[in-house]
Amino acid sequence: MDSATRNKPIDMHLHIVGNGLSGSGCWVNVSGSHKVLAGFMLKHIGLTAGLNSPEFDGGYVENVLSMLRSSSIGAAVILAQDNVYDEDGAVMKGAGTFYVPNDYVLKLAREHKEFFPAVSIHPARKDAIEELDRCVEAGAVMMKCLPNCHNIDCNSRIYKKFWGRMAHHRLPLLAHTGGEHTVKVINKKYSDPRILRLPLECGVTVITAHCATKSGLTDPDYFPAFAEMTKEHSNLYGDNSAMNVPLRGKHIRECIEEPLASRMVFGTDFPVPVSGYWARLRGFVDKETQKKWDKHPNVLERDYQLKKAMGFPAESFTRIWNLLRLPAR
Image (cartoon, rainbow, N blue to C red; front, side):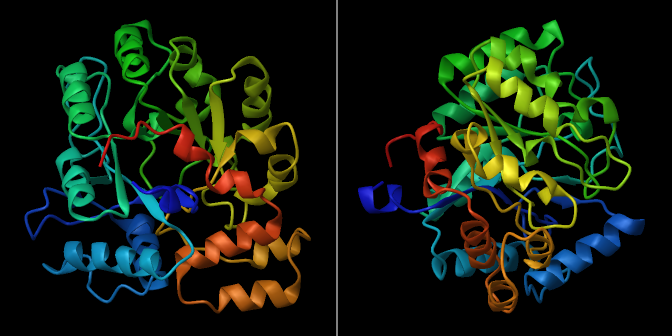
């Protein structure tokens, strides 16, 4: 990777989605409100191939690449999505909303220099440590999980060896925190960022996705717990992904000011919708700025420019380069 790329912003929270009809190994299982929301998100990013189309997987990747290459963002960390498991290491059938194999994001990263792969490994898997070692050897830069949706009690001592192995590999953990309404939630208690104490104590660099903010009106607000934890753990960070939606932006002021500003990294949560209207309501951007970027067809560029205008420091858009496990390319 050249120094010019390292100086550019990187989106460290970008979802890959697929239906598997083209051989990707992905699948999607949405119904009810989740199906409606999925359709809205795909329309929002301008994807023409339907969710059940054989052209969907390739069309989605090309859509992401087109936006990335025409934006100010130099690269993106693309996220795998593991199955849901119980504590005994058995797949909980019907519990997952979508699945993206580690091999698929690893393959996409080999094929496209703009992509860096974040794998997803449920620590209850019988082969969890072997899969972790394999993925690191194959070029993984980060590991992603959603404790509340994947059914992971990260503080359980049965996972201590797994977190220790991650620390050994210097592989950071991106863990969803706060409310979730896009993916089926299995255990709401695991939305609390305090669920991440054991990985932190094992030496893992942890990034709390969304800084433990609310997604829905009835969700608990765990942001104060996240902020307090940063005082105890120097290896704890938060990402500003999905903060251009109605509720998650409530704590923007704290995130753009010290001491939290130095712990923030940039992520879009693509394909989650992006609108500057909410930042304008909170007084972070003016009407002209909001309208300018809300009209911009490139969702990645829109999110980046709005967050710049909202006051996120320049360092927050590149800080993740120093946290990822970057192999030679």
